[in-house]
Image (cartoon, rainbow, N blue to C red; front, side):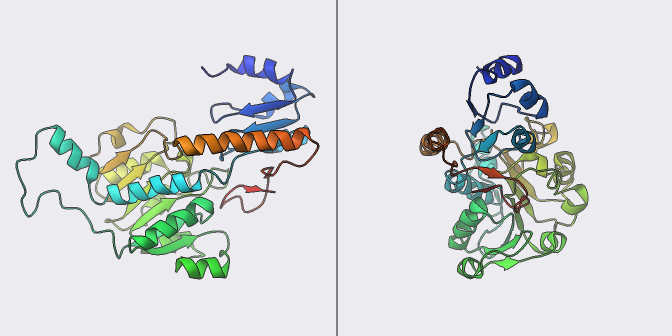
Length: 301
């Protein structure tokens, strides 16, 4: 069971290092109450939107994460959703389970071909790049929006097209993959206005953070047919919007993009490395540094 906030504060007051998870809300008030002994928060995970890193740093607390070990698993899940939603895989499973399948017919369960479609990646960091590699193999044209273009050699290898304007990219692509972190700058980055820029046959996939998408607007646009469908592993308020739960053209997962045995082992190993380096008087390799391309991916030093 997760520790209560009071128990977490009491523990932090009596330790030098805190190994935190996504469920631990470490805000400015927490760091104020934790006292002066706490010196390192070693986060078990890549995302740090549940940690007030600025408040931690102001009190002399270093924050680390596990940024590199989740990319391939998260990319696998994003690619699975990119395939599952247009090809109506979950709808097909439900049809069998409900006894609705009475035999093949030419118009039964028609989906959309993936090959040849344009994939727009919002945030071409580690996960976004891994998705782009997979998308290439499936014949998708890769487009992306970052604060600035990626390394030209990497961009060439991915045959990726950079869009300085997110609005213009959204109006151009067939599938959108959200892969930037949740920060104040990216809250509702996919707002109602931007979602309405998508073409009616477009799909939205999100394995990053739910707060980046205006979920109520997405649910309404999917329900009315203004957007063709969505594949989500994360939600704005923990549980998915009820309209999304009832939508046949939406695939919903319970925040399992990084849930592999291998990733959990590697995450734990990264946490241990960061703690050991810190205890030995060195700078941990995965320190979270504020203010560096935060709209793309948290940077580590």
